[in-house]
Length: 315
Image (cartoon, rainbow, N blue to C red; front, side, top):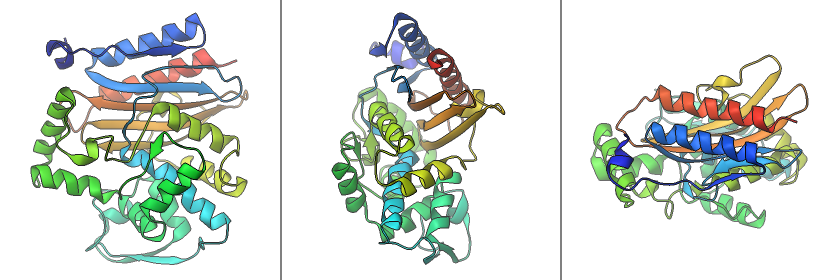
């Protein structure tokens, strides 16, 4: 029995599926996640047939580093419009940069990187310092306003990446274990102590909104084709494959995605494309009911969900 069940407040997900077989897959994934003590939402959409399956697809949740995808699209749109030069050099000083363990965030000395390569670092290794350097050029409010203008009403951008860690420190000092404990406790209570875990204050979005964004990016139906094509290329450079992609590794498949991780949040969005022509967009947004920095079983469950959804939605 999971802690959620033991508390007497077990969540019952609302499943969707365009036929009985797809609904069965959605219900099986939801049950699998619940057995692990995972609260979350999942959506998989065949980009060509429009068939879908998932659960709790309209629930807004904090995005963590998944927010780097809409940021990248807005930056790429400005580059395509000639308002920003991809070759423009930007110097990032570790003494003033953002918290993180990859890319420029882990550097010990100042480094100068072109805007286009900041985008690569941000999406390939989820570099927080690179993301916040891009926010210096395209402020959060501008990113959010551009999303509104594009009709992406289910995605909100409200803060830089480092603000997540500033809020965690404000609540728990420099004790990551305590911050994680607070996140799990507050998830059960529904009253976030850490502001950036509150969908009303965080960079937030739903599985439906994120899959809708991916559909438009893959269909060149948002921004301009030069921007969307480059975003697809950069998402294909992600090095992390332990979540949705872990059961989609094959020479005949291509995965383009972006993970997001913060305290008990483990997310990923992306698109799997097969040589057969099948294309399925997915979003998996999870919150664990345990105090664990590592949870390979949850990541494997995300991968199993992606595999089952892809097989069910193939034509």
